[in-house]
Every structure is written in structure tokens, then in C-alpha cells.
Length: 443
Image 1 (cartoon, rainbow, N blue to C red):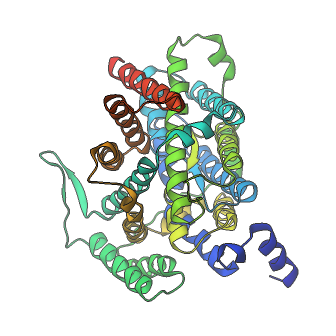
Image 2 (image 1 turned 90 degrees about the vertical axis):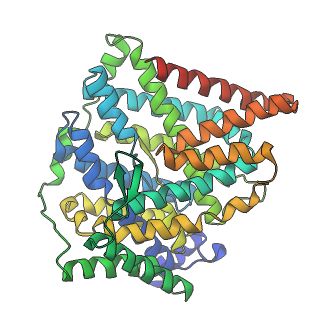
């Protein structure tokens, strides 16, 4: 990379100004990609059960993640990578297509319209108002809750935590190869981090993968496809059927759920990652917020057009931040790697889950820091913060945790008699959340 290119990147992304370096940003982007690469295999498996072509969904997943991450990096200059969201893809398949009998092209149309609504709310300033309405102690709890969430994902991926019919979860087999390899990776990454070694997370992921290969614990069977596979899902969304109303009022419910979950998942991830990266202002506000939200909305619309479920910000971006990423170049590098993966998506599985699990566990532990900002001895802050903190990992949903925290905060404000005219949006959000949960329960 010549001097002029390096100079342009430096100026464009304000690398030195944010206390980073070109090498660090590249390593951070690779680290984020490695912790997110599983989506290339998992998303097609889930959406494939809805009857969508597997090869097409795989190509659409790579394209959507590449477009969204590069757009976020270039437009908003934040180390926030995006891809089709876990949870939202499961809702798409199991609740919408299989549960309600909605054809997948119509479901894609609903995803697209939720993106349009997302963009409209952003341009109207409503999403920004929602973020401003969430009190600081809940923002801190969201960051901590997401830390527990991604650590739990890592522990589950490693087999350290497993399902149990009697106790819901239990300790896995500590003698199994994936568990031992995860513990090796965690020890290596933690040790390198203690010694302030740059790229500790990436080194740990690569070393654990190589060790897994050496001991015969890396099992991988690629299924080749080419980029032309994108045509089997691209532009197949059916907006006409959505507007025709042939599927009843349920379509409005589907659009609302896509919008609701994406809204709070995105806001929660945004708050946690920018806080961890030191990009949030002292009052908790986020620079370039409008650009971030517009990029996110555009990503969902482009993703639906390409042929995948809702695209959203990924909590795994925190792994890149922990590796030193502070600018949009981290997201751009992640996006470029996803773009290259279109031509080699089957080989993303070369990095096993037990190799990325240590990174998620370590990053999760580091994200506990903001919890000191909560006044735990004061129930007015402690109760909503605890509900947010606990329910994000326990319900496997950032949106659910934030929703419970907002409702609890609103109720305690009423009981305390501390309402003011400026709290109207907080109470409106709480009411909408209660209606949403009541609707789901009645469905």
C-alpha cells in the first residue's frame, strides 16, 4: 500500500485522531469477520427451511453483509459491521413462513417495507429521539447485557454450556475436544491481552484453528457454488402480494415485528459498541448517529432485495473493537472479506465455532465495565437495569431486554411521581411495548 493511499485512508477515517493505526484497523476488521463468518453457513440453513434456495441465500448473505458493512464504514465511520440478524431469520422462517403460511417472497417484501419504515423514522428524527429517551443507567445495562449475551453465545458454541431438560442449561463435557480447544484459545487470548499484544484476539483465533486441525478436531466439507447463485433469490421479493392484502392484517404484524426487533437490536448494539470503542460522548450520545441509522435502514432494504432476512448491526463488532478498531475502516475491511466470501463461502467454515468462542467470551467480560455507572443501591435504577441485564441473555434477545428495562423504568417513574413533559416518548414506548407483548401472547 503506497504512501498516497495510506494518507487518504488516514484522512478519510481519522485513524490517528482516534488513537488507532492502519494495521490495527485491518486486524480489527479481520477479527470481526472471523467472529461473524458463521452467519454465512447458519443463515442459509435457517432460511433454507422456509423453502429458499440454499446457494442463493448463501450468496445473498455474503452480499448483504458486505454492502452493509462497507456502507456503514464509509458513511458513518464507525467500527460497526452488519449482516442478516440471528433471531430475525428464525422469526422469518418459523413464525412467518412455516407458522403463518406466508410465501417467502412475500416475507421478503415485509422485510423490505420494515426497512422503508425504519428509514422514514430516521429521517423524521424519531429513532434519534428514542435513543435520547433511554436513561444512562439503562444504556450501561444494555452494554453489560450484550456482554453477557455474546459471552453466552461463546460458551454455548464451545460446548461449555449445554441444554438440559431439567435445568434449562448445564455444564458440558469438559473433556471434549471443542471445550479443551476453547479453553486453550481463551487462555492464549487473555494472556496476550494482559501483555498488551496487538491482535491478541486474531492470534488466538488462528492458533486455536490450527491446533484443532493438528489434533483432528476440524471437520469440514465444502459445498461449492458460484456467485451467479445470487440470482435465485435476488429481486424475488413480492411487494404486490403485501399490498394486495391477501394475507390479512397478519402482514402488518409481521412488518411491525421486523421493525420493532431491528430497532431495539440495532440501538442496543450501537450503544454497546460505540461505548466500548470510546466513541460515545460524555452524555451518552453518539456522533454521526443519523448516518449510522440511515446506513442500517438502507442495509435492510438492500438485503431484502438480494434475498435475505433483516440486516442489522452485529454484537460481534465488539470483538473488532476489543482488537483495537476505532474507525469505519474496521467495518470496511470486514465488508471486503464478506464480498470475497461470495466466491468462497463454503470455506468460511474452516474457522470452527470453538475457535471464535474464546473471542466472544473475552469480549463479553470486557463489556461489563459500564455496569459501574448504575447506582445498584438505588432501586429506581437497579431494577430496570437488572431486568435489562438479565433478560438480554436469558431470552436470547437484545430487544426483549431493552423492552423490559424501558417498561420497568416507566412504571417506577409513575410510582415515584417523577414524570415530566419531556418523558412523553418514554411512556409512549412503554405502552407500545406492552401492546406488542400482549399481541404476541394472544397470537
